[in-house]
Image (cartoon, rainbow over all chains, first blue to last red; front, side, top):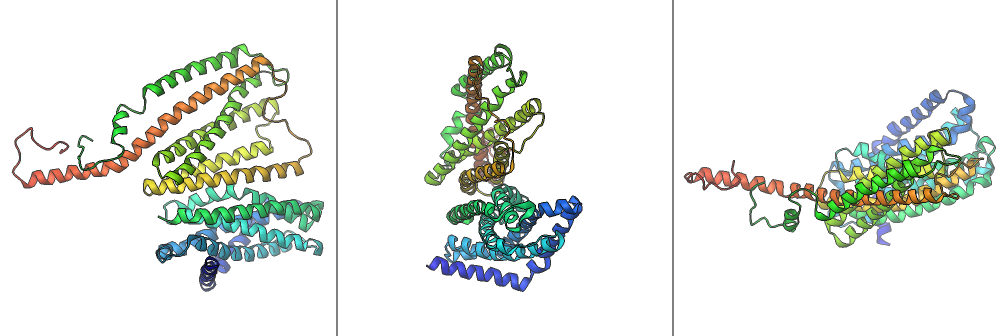
Length: 227
Length: 274
């Protein structure tokens, strides 16, 4: 259980840093909002926007996630904090889980804000019947995204060219989440006549993805940062 | 590199001596000649002897390149995964270099598959690209291994590079089935008409099947030949990284020693001092 306890401490530390620095609220959320607005410029017609809104929510989430991951590891690398944690004998699995949880919490906040933006800007409605599917989708997709983000963020941390490497590694890996979460949210919001029951197979995919990268990430994180 | 300090013993020295003339050996030369012969054979059968297809017309000839290259690419990525796993298990840089060389060649082969496939699609389907499950997965496979190769180029020691890329090589094995599954699910639910499969396995003419078989042999030999050269090339790059600095230091030390003592008679200056 000690791994979980340390993971909780790492997560609390990351969230405290975010709480004090306000990077999420002052930079990442505005960035996500701007993304939602410029999607509207690119697609122009309201009909198209209404149809593709769930996909745009997840695209904006992915782009903002790249910023959040870089931020998450910039605070570790700047003062050699990650090395200090390793020298102190902290289990890398605990660091991975802790940072994944902290990233996941921030992503959830981001997704809820983006969903709200979609309701306002893209004329989406959230039917009560789809609420359970929506919450399950957000949770499982977030777990998968956070695990992948932390894994590749840890790899790219501390190297020249990491800013460009991170999207290259992350985006192909999270393609299943983008596909699955978009379809599931379409089903939950009833976009283009989709029904709620269509969404559940996609949640299955999202859960398998989250478990695979959660387990794979906690095993792989040690060798990746241990240098 | 004329100086070889006896104190700087390296596990690689014997191997370097064997590759002193480049990365070719008797074995690779034989495989190289066999590859040229097989490629000539493929050209003869692919462009000459094999008949044109009833539906695909002359475009069917592209498949003699398209299908073998993707098969060999799958083989190459399997070798990368095995090399990655074996590196983590054995900690021998040889496995890492095999994994890297195989991934490079596999990526090139996938690129060939995609380009040839797009041309074939234009001739047969009328479009370069279809958002078909297999095509989409292949495109993501290509990007994934481009990422793997980028990870190999991050700075750090050889061991750091090997460990990082081994982990990424194994994560790719986790990633590809998930991508394939999701893309299949995506297309099966969202496409009314199923597009033609990209392979040509429907009641193939015997001569066509034989030409395809020739293609597989030719590209297998090419893969083998390239992997052997590239693995040795990577070994030499690593060796230069390891020893280049040592050799330069030894040369500068010898220079300093030569400057501090009375100059030795001409002809007895330590080798490597410029």
